[in-house]
Amino acid sequence: MLSFRAHSKRKLFSFNLAAVLCLVPLALAGQNNSSARTTNSTTNPGSWSGTLVSSSCNADEAFNESPDCTKNLPGAKLALYDDTSRVMYGLEPQESVTAHLGDSVTVHGTLDGDTIRLASMELMSIGLAVGQKAPAFSVHDQFGQVQTLATLKGTNGTVLLFFRSADW
Image (cartoon, rainbow, N blue to C red):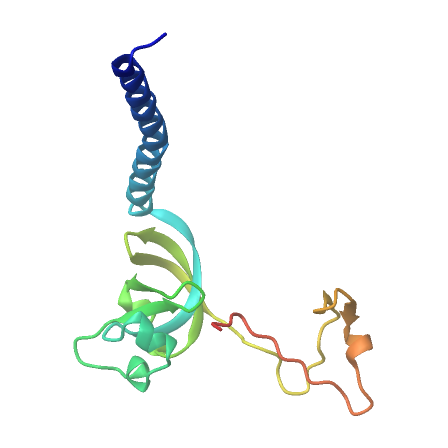
């Protein structure tokens, strides 16, 4: 039979061992996150979509579509605001984007920290042109039923509304 003192030491050892076993994965996760941040700050090729705004504007102002975000202000550069992630990216070289303040674009290049080094840029077309027919589609509605353009079409036509994101 263990003495009270030996029993207390064994409980204390078990508690410390459990604490260490719980903390080691957290420490390793922290190391993985810091290495991920280091990796993200290096050059990564890709493409990003958003709106070209003034760098004098912050992400909250861009999200709220502040009129100042689409003004050409002295000393400000153009930045790409990605409204799906609410991130602002610097853009270089600026000569490629100066004529497109306020436009929705997709840029291709490499991400270096929080700056995109542009390889190319294209204007995004949003929505259908007036009179253009909607493409065939099928989607599940809120009840799990498949809906198509034909099932939604009414006697006076159909109004379709698509949106990229909602912040409810």
